[in-house]
Image (cartoon, rainbow, N blue to C red; front, side):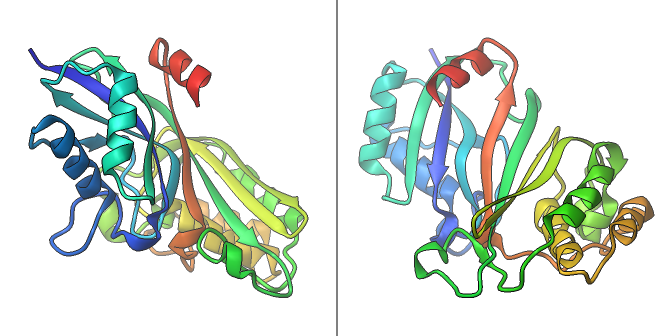
Length: 257
């Protein structure tokens, strides 16, 4: 009898062509499916709550798969981490109802974009932060963020190809903060368009550098025209922080992660 398992996965996306399987190159999905096959002998597909692009990282990606294995979740975690490469780790595993859908039943997704805002680069942070040497004005960036909150048509923050599934989403949080030379942009929404966070950050950086006013940023949002925002910030500064669910899974994740 098959059951459904959910995994919480962390990964460094630097050496991968994104989460989803690609004709050429290594992917997070491919590595997970290979590890599961080595553990259970099953050739199967995993489904992700959010398909991250090439170079994007995650500390709280959520995936699911069906399996005939009777191994308990704790054993699955240990065994998969044995088979996975060092850049990918399973943090937790849960058994869920057969009809549970990691994508449709997600209440929200949280992303963080990290910027190294210093006069000199940092070799140790080059894989996880985007270096911007000129000082960013955080107040102006947060003023611009205010217009992102709520339900809007975010078509300006994707390409024409990214509009197929609809462009109206609800943003619950969008804020910029500074801690020393680190500037972070945190965004939580019910769902995201392709490249939405990176295009948002690219526009916010222009605001922070005085190249775009908060009012002009709001005009980009209101235009709802694909391609208006940007330029897109590099992928390596972006990290999927968390996917939120209703109880009981949401409560379990709060305890473990």
